[in-house]
Amino acid sequence: MSARRTPSYAVILRTILAAVLPAASLVAGTAAAAGQAAVSWKTVQAGVEFASITAQPGLAAGSSPLYVVRVDPGRATIGAGLASQGQHAPQTAGAWCRTSRFAVATNLGMFDADQRSHTGYLREERHVNSRRWNDYRSVLAVRPKASSLAQALWLDLDPAKPPPVLDSYDIVVQNLRLIAGNRKNVWSQSTRRWSEAALAIDSRGRLLFLFSRAPYSMRDFNDLLLKLPLDVQRAMHLEGGPEASLSVHVPGLDLDLCGSYETGFLPSDSNDHQWPIPNVLGVLRQDAKPSSSPP
Image (tube, rainbow, N blue to C red; front, side, top):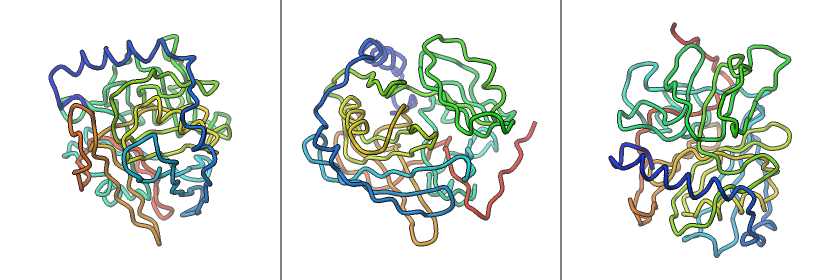
């Protein structure tokens, strides 16, 4: 779903934004049955839990589960891997885990045709991958520089100007909004579906790394999240289709998950491998320490 797939991406994005932003107050009940799904959490390292949820049929093709990694940013260290920072080639989420000592890695968001630049604003410490603030409405900031600040700050940027408090965080990323504050599903219904990698936050400030290989429309995907007992408060889109990825590599659990289906690009379940991606959001392994960014 990234910009490098088609030269008309900007037109498509404007069309999507025009369709979804006016629908901020709409919440459908089509995923009501999914709210009964049980969630059994497994602790995989301090501050990191894993669950595989079997959603009820009827909302997506196939029967693949929804995978969730729940991260307490006060107990686990959030990191980012940016190809632009080290001037190296994009790599799969699984490779990012190996090279950056991540226990967990997923897409950090969509990227442009140069296969480096994030499509919204993105900064890690002093390294700015993309300076562009656009019409995306979700912003996440993690790794605060002061103990008095929230470990994870999630903002709805309806007033387009970003607040100065973001300067007090090491990692700031802007992405396309899925669920706004007060648990509002901001997407209208569409026939377009794709495998999805997303990020959410719950009422306790824990981050939820979300992955579904089964394709959903984003309205149905949001409804599913809101009905499940995940306490989702806000959510953002990270990537769709075959580039959607989630890797988990901890003792006793090794997963390299890849998406496939995307309307208008790869309308099948045929993809069987992770695609290289330039930017990832990760959770450092317990034995790893965050490295300092270059000037």
